[in-house]
Image 1 (spheres, helix red, strand yellow):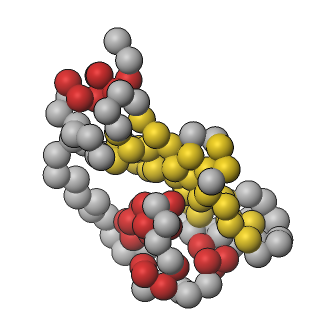
Image 2: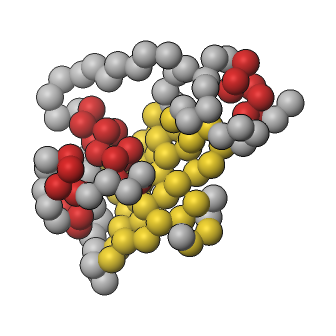
Length: 122
């Protein structure tokens, strides 16, 4: 049975976010969040990365940095001390028969970012 079928049987609907992954992004070296098929709530003390997850979703899906209200400068989302390394946020989204992975890679060195969908530059 393929992954999309398993997810649908668990109650996920087309368009559901099934995975959020961050690397060298704000407070995280590496972090993965696997939302459930229904209501999801992030709880924790201040400074533990709750907003970082929502920022990753927004920026990976094409949102502008100023949209999240943290900084107008995209490069402020790279984890401090990791400016010379790759930083990215990615989101897995359920389609009809598969999960598409949308990734935004941020490069502080050449002050650029790029998007890929399932590993292909878009």
